[in-house]
Amino acid sequence: MADRTAARKRKQRLTLMIGGAAATAAVAVLVATAVVNAGGSDDKPQSLPTPETLPAEPDQPEPTFSDVSVPPPPKPIDFISNVKKDKAPLSAGTLFPGKSVTMSSRSYDRGASASSKKCASGVSGRLAPALNRNDCTRLIRASFERGGVAVTVGVAVFDTEAQATKAKEQANGNVQSLAGDGIPSFCRATACRLTTNAIGRYAYFTVSGFTSGKAVTSSDTKARQAGKDIADYTFSRIVDRGESQASAAATAQTGN
Image 1: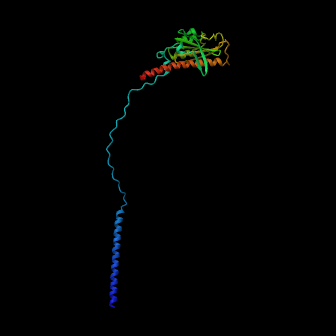
Image 2 (image 1 turned 90 degrees about the horizontal axis):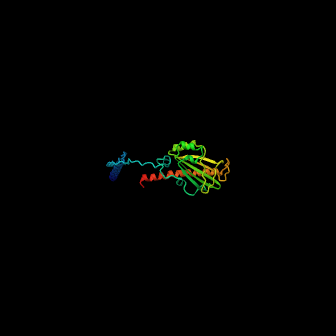
């Protein structure tokens, strides 16, 4: 009986010891858990370190520009529009150089040429008043021939563009054909093709027809084409005159 009582007491003490040890372990676990949770329980965002304040950049100098403006390039039309700027040599030879002219594969042989300060002497009586009224200073003529069709172009020279333009607008009649140097007389007392135009201080006129003396009809294409070709050639020669003088002036401006 005494042994059973002692055994029961030992069992009770053992149970209490185990329970106490378990409780102690549980407390240790809770404490450890609490420590771990305490380290990560702060939900507030972590602020980044403030960047260092950089020194201000030094002021950069503003770009500067020269006050000297570059003059615009000279215009060719300016040189052929006024006698004060149109200083290049002017003659039948400089205006119509060479012995032939080719326009769109059509070749024309050059014949006689002439130049006179008496403009009325080389034109018809109906054209003379337009030249005299506007103070024509020179008339340059040259003739060309191709396949039995001849053309004479007459270039009337004035001091200003305005005078040449008025002469073209007032023009009536024709320039007189010019024979010689292989071209027989043509467009005398017979119907021929006429053109009139002007550029700058130059008015120019063409008369074209057959060297055989045959009259030019309204349906004819040969005399009309020849007159147009020589008129276009004359235009290009006057333009070339302006371009060469403008180029020389531009070179002088740059000092090259």
